[in-house]
Image (cartoon, rainbow, N blue to C red; front, side, top):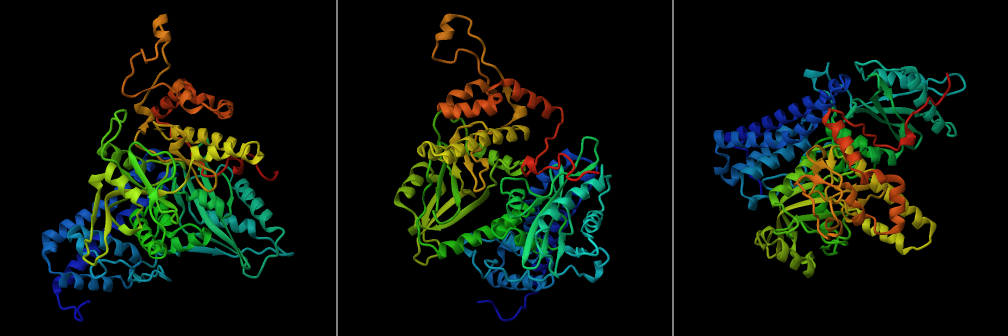
Length: 608
């Protein structure tokens, strides 16, 4: 129980120091996010990529800073638990009018658990559940009212027999973002968007509440800026996004008009890099985005906005809630077992859990530290919609009774250093504790997806499934190549299929930068002995790659081979890889389109 009186001046000082630490963190985070607009306007693509990487490190740096201050000034780890209870209550008081209370609570948890022993990680000392509501927070700080802007803007175009102001409304909406770069043909872009929007609205009676709502800040990622909003008409809400790019001459152009939840899901996919968005009230942005994508969990939206620690916090709360309301057991994940990772799942929960094994077969020359560095590389890299995001946790406790005996034996055999089984809370409930685990969205392994198509025989839908997945597999590799990523192990089992049919790579222990690889053709044999040899007779360096040797491992099935060679034969040619390496080394930054090519405004939609 909490004490009834807050009678420790030290407790308030500690709470205030922690709040100062969080405010510094979010100020720096928001400043870096806001600078994305200038980088976009000046086409500073390398700077944009660098900022996206560096911003990921901000949170841990601020937690370390704050923890060090508490230890130095207040000897935080030596304070009795009664003081820490008071610290939390004082901190709650400081959150009452705060604009980012949920993020500040998570920051408190991070600092507290860094200072205190893990056995104190319960609700008396950290925020297991949120203490402050994020509903209806307004950007109404009287000291900064001149800089305040609403979370979203609402526009009310008129469309009746007398006038149609939708086009003018769209033009004003775009002007309000105040982009400091000229459009190549602003009128044409507005006409294109108006034509698509009007087409979607034309068969529908417009209701009294007809309006367009748009988030006040642009969403920046890679070489694009995105307008995100929704059309409201009666009881219907239609999400939309407008990607703004630079054309070949360096002028701005609206590249497409994306409509509907599926398009927005692709834009905010867990396999893409985080957005840069200037947000005073992040919870309001999340609430708005959830109205566009109600199937998308809040934790994934926070992740997409670059607030990965908040995403992890919400994911873990959702996971604990799911455990309390389910009864199925954790099991070894279906599919071919990995040589480096031990993978398990809970059938009723749409994620997989991955633990690094303690030892690997001889052909895997790696270490735990190298594997962790590869996963960190993916976390900070542009994932171009082709690499799954991972959540990384330490000291994760699971109820032991929910684990299949076969899975427990598997962990004990392959990852004993990562396993602890104990009643650490002393309540008689045995727990299985994993010291380090990665968590990813569950997908259908591509090899299983292909096998389903094979098993269906001559069914036309199965043939279409097979062809689409093979084409998508090649597209995934080419997207990774463009992003300077060599997957390493390109076997089908290391790729998964998402619910919308996209193929995504998820086995990172052998990835390398394309620019670090040496792509070679297999040398011609010099004599009959070399030609007949069953062994590799030519020299192979540690970073040498021979693309023509991929075929025997990937294309054993004749149907698969025919589709692959028709669409992606260039992947077996060293020249393809080398040309991309040269372009990247020369400073080229690839274009990433998180939407289908057919949605692009390749030609004006209406004639002038």
